[in-house]
Length: 450
Image (cartoon, rainbow, N blue to C red):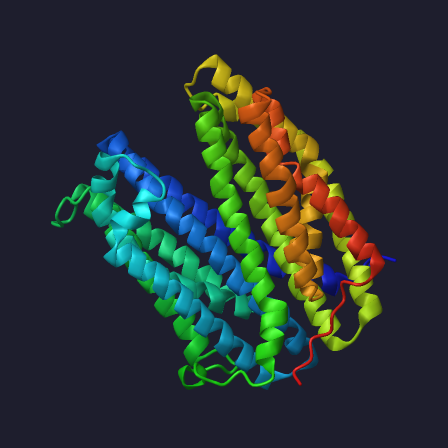
């Protein structure tokens, strides 16, 4: 029923899981330090950077969908040792990534005001953020290709190069931010624009390091730049069937999270601030969820590719049990951290009360939330059941969670706790729906190269 004491299973899970967690923590650290350095130049600069980074955060969800979609196919082909279709999958994924990333680069670099107006109507903030957004826009294409190459390498267990690239980019970002924001070592003092210069340098390095390695030296795929235009052939239909639903699912998720922020913002400043405060701690939980779900998708995809369906089921059972137990185990730790964490903020008592309520509700839903993440973003994706997941994701968020949350806040005028719960009710609902799907066994889809 379970994997039991299979040391190779647990070793492989940790090897895949830990780098994902570390890379996401590095990303959170970059955003935190950016805000800390920019914070000394006033609220307008902070807001301008925040809105520009919201556009980048939405783009990252698209990148996550592109990369995860590629993993669905490449992990199964790797399990069967089929290198030729792996190269074709890489080529198709990178072409789609390049096309979508180019659109964002064009918007950011050429029409930054248009992109910023989506998030704010404040003329002063838009004016302050225009130059910042124009420079950040250059990084969309670089980041998109680096991200997809990272996911492809993860699907075959190669995690060291992307992790080293992210870590080096993190320290480069900090250093060049310090240099150009404050005008150190003889550089001009660029303030907000200096933060963008530091980000461009860091992202350019990461692209050269990660994508350069993938296109020049990586041997599992054997992908080289000459393969970029490889025709999809019969795999085009498979890509549309199995990979594109993941892109749509994660894009819709990114949109829904943006709308959640809009709902909070139109209810009250207190609930919006409380969500921002609690969200920083909740984001750490999401990092762990992403690590475990990403590892489970690859391990199970490889096992299905090898043709061992009974083992894939046992691995799935084990991941569900581990996620459920881990969800319970971290609750006491988070409860212990809540008090010290809240004391870091100087806020009104009402805002603090709402933030604590949000955190406590998150802890109550945590076991089901972790199970939902691991089954939906991990097990079922690894099994190729991506079309069902698109329906489950979009239905739970767009037809249940968002409407109920909006009604609770704008029509029923319920307390902030109820609004928060209903906006997050998708997780327990999705966990239940996906668990039923998992038990049916219909989630296992063997992806053929021909």
